[in-house]
Each structure stands twice: as structure tokens, then as C-alpha cells.
Length: 377
Ligand code: ATP
Ligand code: MG
Image (tube, protein in one colour):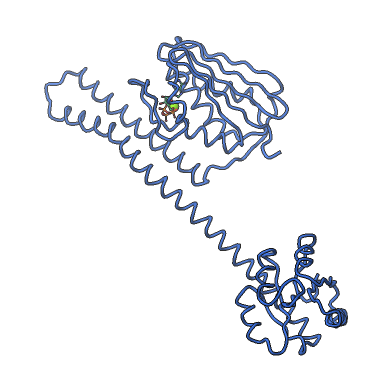
């Protein structure tokens, strides 16, 4: 602060007082510069055109008088430190000015070079502290808002998730009771109940994994970390992993266009997105059919398209498709938790991309994901 040059705006209608300030300021040896204007309107204009570190403001000007000058100036220029200039008998006015946002005051007839320099420095420091306080207040408010949002999400999560847990838990309890008390069960029946228990446990584990994953995207735990990657190899890998678990009713085909060998994307997020979309394409095509995965790489963006010939998505459901726990009216007995697409959407958002659906019941569904090649550019 000692060595920093300061840029001062002097708002003073008396030419002789202004001259005195100018002399004192240049004699102070602090460098910097002082711009002088005579009216409040000119002062506001000057602040809109350039940046000042501090303003010396006479309250009695040709176009404004008393504390109104300060109020009007503060409203027009909210963040600049102000030193009010008053007359000897205006002590009361000076104190009022301080409570209305001035950082300091100087009584004109008592000003010395030392007093002027000290007051300017003091006002700038107070202004800086005030700004820091305001900034941290904003940061705290934002954090509180975020916490409130998370709490709301947590409670709706807990109520829906506990409901989703009940079904597999009830299956497990009923099956265990039957195995425990019905001693006449055939070997085959016993195996059926054990299979039911295993399936219910897998369902619970899947649910827990997805809830944790979605929770971590909401809490900012899942970050976008791009690395150079070969998208063709990546898509083949995802399809290969998926094909292990499907039968010959399904024909998965993959095509690619453009240069897809050096994209900058986040592999982990991409894996969530396309594992979810491809496993949906299979799961919601119980009769089997063609599953088409197309990749089109342009210089600025990459388009991924996944098309199936499955049960389709009713038009009413398409509106809430990406909401957590939403399952469509036509799923019948097909198992699911309704979290996959909510997670997919968060991963696409982290990529600054977009996802769209086009679907017809009993004809099929196309999910299109467009991701910028280098988000932020
Ligand atoms: P999971 O969380 O295990 O993935 P889910 O498959 O039910 O469960 P989402 O993947 O979020 O959940 O899908 C939400 C709903 O959207 C599904 O329940 C289903 O009704 C519908 N849906 C998603 N993909 C398709 C598709 N390809 N064809 C038809 N319906 C679909
Ligand atoms: Mg799914």
C-alpha cells in the first residue's frame, strides 16, 4: 500500500480548494494522479469511464447538497472508497456520512499533507476489507444454498430409495422364511428360492452403487478429467464387455465416421454414459433385435447414437426421463431402479454436452449424445 500509486477522483466545486488539494497531493510524494471534477454528475460519469482507488467528495456541489450527494454517489458507484470533505462546523454531518457508507472524512480547514495521505490510505484499506467481507458473505451464502439443495435431494433420495429397497428385502425375507419353515420343499423349489434371494441381493447392490454414484455427481465428487483417447477402441471395448452377457437374439453393430482416434474426453464418464445406454437398449428390447451404435467425429464435436428396436418410451414419460427413479409406464416386469439415465445425464452435463431421445412405443428408441471434442473452447 505504501508504494502503490493511487488514482484519486476529487469532487470539489471550489476552484481554490481544488488547487490546494492538488498541491498537497503532488507534494505528498506518493505518485499517482488526481482527477478533478466539479459536479456530482461529472463524478459519476468519470467513475463509469475509469477506475479510481478512492474519491474525495465535497458534499455541497452545484447539482447536489448534503448527505444526498453521498447517497446518490454510493448508489451509482457502489464499491469505491469515499473520503467526505466537510467544513469545520459539520462534525455531525461527517459522522452521519460515515454511517451511510463513507470510509472516512476530512475537515477542510484542518487538512495537512500527512492527514490527507493517511486518510486516503485508510479509506482504501477499509474499502478493501469491506469488499473482502462482502465476497466471503457471498461465498458463505452460495455454500449454504448448495447445502440446502443437497439436503433436499438427500431427503427425497432417502424416501424414494428406502421404498426401492423394500421390494428386494421383502423377497429375501419371504424366501428365507419359506426355506426355513417349509421342510417339504423339493430340491428344485429350494434352488428357485435361493436364486430369488441372489437376484434380490444383486438388485440391492446395484441400487446402492447407483445411489452412491448419483450422490457423488450431485455433491461435485465426480469430476470431469479429460485425457486423449481413441474413441473407436473405446466403443469396441464397451460393446465387447456387453456382448459377454447377451445371447444371439441381439445383433449389435458399430459404425464410425471421421477422425475418432484422438479425442479429449473423460473415459470414466464416457463409460457410465454408454454402458447405461447400451444396457438399456438391450434390456428394453426383450424380443431381441438390432442394436446400432454409431459414432460420428467432427472437428468440434462428437455425436454418439444408440438405436434399438425395443418397447419404446411413451411420449408422456419422455418429459421426466432423466429424473432420478423415473421408470416408464410400459416397463412391465423388466427390472430397474430408474437411476441409470439420471447418472448418464449428469455425466453428459459434466462434459458440457447434450443428450436427446427420440422414441416410438413398440418401434424403438434412439438416444443421441453430442459432446464437444474439447469442452470450454
Ligand atoms: P437402472 O437404474 O438399473 O438403469 P432403469 O433402466 O429402470 O434402471 P434408467 O436407465 O434411468 O433406469 O431408465 C429410466 C426408464 O427409461 C426405464 O425404466 C425405462 O422405462 C425407460 N428407458 C430407458 N431406456 C430405454 C430404452 N432404450 N427403451 C425403452 N425404454 C427405455
Ligand atoms: Mg437403465
